[in-house]
Every structure is written in C-alpha cells, then in structure tokens.
Image 1 (tube, rainbow over the protein chains, first blue to last red):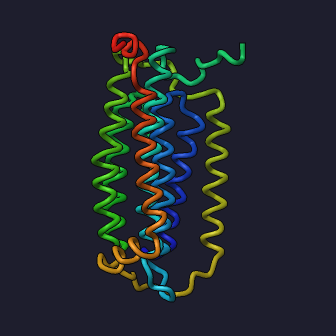
Image 2 (image 1 turned 90 degrees about the vertical axis):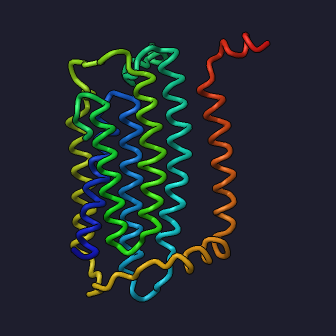
Amino acid sequence: MGLQGFLFVSAILFGIGMFGFLARRNAILMLISIELMLNAVNLSLVAFNAYDYYAPDDTGAIFALLVMAVAAAEATVGLALVIAIIRTRQTPEVDEYSDLKE
Amino acid sequence: MVTLRNIIHSAIAMMVCFGSLAGMYALLGAPIVAAAQVLIYLGAISVLILFAIMLTQAGDANLPSPFHRQAALAALAALVVVGLIGWAVTQTDWGNVTVIIAVGLATLSRALFTDYALPFEILSLLLLAAIIGAIYLARRPEDDERAN
C-alpha cells in the first residue's frame, strides 16, 4: 500500500470527521467526529514514522500516544459538558441552544 | 457512520473504525500504538460515548433530519480539504521508501521516559485536571444541597 495509501486513508477519515462535525445536529455525534479527526491525524503520524527511513526513531509513535491521551481527556471533559447541557436543555440538538441569539 | 440516523449505530460504526485503525497501526509496525488504540479508544472512549448516549437518549429520538441546514456546505468544505490533502500527497515526492521501520518497545519506552519525560508528566497533570473537571461538570447541582 505504501505511505501514500495510508495518507489517503487518513485524509478521507479527516474529511468524514470534518463533515460530521459541521453537518450533524447532535452534540454527541460532533464529539465522535472530533475523535475521528484525531484518529486521522494519528494515522498519518504513525505512517510518517513507519516510512521515515533516514531518521529511524520513534517520535511519530510517541506523538501518537500523546495525542491519544489528550483525546481521552478531551472526550471526558467534552462528554461531561454535553451531559450537563443536555440536563439543563433536555435536548442534544445543538441548533436548539439559541439563548444568546434571542 | 456520520450519516446514520440512529446515534447508537454511529457509535458502533465508530468502534469498528477504531478497531480497523488498530489493525493499520499493527500493519505499520507499531504494535504499541495498536495496543494503546485498543485500550484507550475501543476500551475507554467508546464505552464513555455509549454511556453518554444511553444516559441522554430519551427513547428513540428519530428526528426528521439529523443534519443542519448547512450540510451541503459542510460536505463541500470537507471535500475541498480532502482534495487539497490528496493533491499535496500526490504532488510530493516521497522518495521510494518501502521498508517499514518497526517501533521497538525498548527504544520507545526509553525515549518516552528520557527525551519526552516532560510532556509525559504534563500529560498526567492534564488527565488529572480532566478527571476533576469532568466530575465537577457532570455532577448534579441538587447533590450539593442534599450534601449540605
């Protein structure tokens, strides 16, 4: 498959995540889309690390692990925020959160 | 998976996607990252998201449309980004490197605890802050009154 194949997969995954984040109305699905985009970046990091013949160190893999930990923290806080806002507004649809507009 | 109407189906599709990504990490010679992917994403984040969905879903909220009005614009923006990245990937000369450099557990651990020790420690602090923040945010306000 080669480096380019992995990068294409990563780009497509990022595009799907971006579309989901911008187009969906459900707050939880927006968080899922963010995870998808982070995974896409992780995939490209690991792919670049695997095919970097001239500087064979593990920087890409370490960065992927760090990104995973940050993604876990982000998912925790994001889901807590979403649960709190759903508890007060009784709906997960983000376009119903229009208090500041009115 | 981002077009499915039922959000639980989306979450299960996301788990499938994370699992196949773990397989790709293993293909790329990074079994550590694959194991971390399975543990963190399949084990922790997926369960967290499924929990959040089941806590918040009031019955089956089958709405007329799961998309915003700007869905077409969003699709266009995503396609433009994918096209730009794809164009950059095809236009760049990557050399003819076909050998996959495997990540060794020993070298990775040594690098993580020597060169990257500071980011590692900062990360543990970040996770602590995230835990405290999540507990504070997700707590019901009336629990305070009952505790007092």
